[in-house]
Length: 440
Image (cartoon, rainbow, N blue to C red; front, side, top):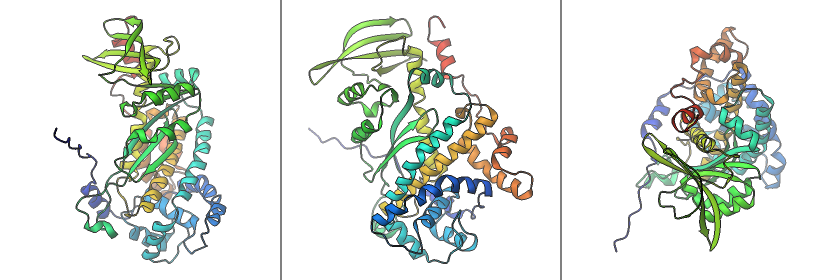
């Protein structure tokens, strides 16, 4: 029997993206209010890591942990094309809370290679609960399906993985490699209501399967959570662990799913709702299979919520569609905040950039959520990309004296800046009511 060839990865380093980054002019500094927001959120958490820094046996240097954090955050937020460009700006203007300093590019490159990336990971993990608390303190509407779900469950989370793009081959030992080596793989749990990550993991193995992260995921999911994930996580043994932890999940069901029909809950021309039995290690497990006909195609969903009054069919589908929020988050960190372009080739440098990017993603979500609160619209209706891009106009307006802070300027010009997404399709809940339910 012929050996089956592995399907080549579709993730490739975008050469045009690399060239575009190199040809840009140095970006303007952030306005004072935005810079103060970043400092207020990140700087205290960075200082809190200094004791752990000393526990690692690291000595004080010119490029201290706070200074390197300011540098890495600036590299991400201002989208510098290279470390050397950031160095020139640092020496002339300073970066965030880091005053101008004279230091060589070789020294910065060495620190990016040797400064333990776990320090920035600890900063991220310390900050995320604070960011969730800031989100909870604001008042703004939620999408209908999420508002309903949070009445029945304590939280709605999505989990998924994403492969990072290729490294630049002109750096160090990568120069002689025949192909662009991929930078690794990340896994994240995202709160789909707040759009903020709960946990992020990284491995340098770009071929790592989602299944590898199940132990980490299970340790991070508390009871009374509604967890959304795709077919890549199909593992009935792990589903048993979720059931034991009192975690409700919704996922897609494979076409070749083998099961025994236990009970028909609903059966119509457009909707099938069944209780089924699946054998796992000779143990029968009852699950719920929901099949929905939409635009001529059957979609199949699997959940361990067996009571259709607690989780009706319409919410099974509408909530699973909310899983796409984690795909949106990956798109933002990779394409908008530049995690598709790496300044260094070392694993440590890549990991530093990874944690810094997620830190600034949380800052961007926090800023966008404040805008949503002022506009009294759901955060889901706000384009995080346009908020980020519109900060350019806020900087100029503040310097001209036409604005005092970015939030008020963004709110006043929300239509001009395109901050509220255009309604291209009806909301999922309304669409399902009109096209699927027999008695909408």
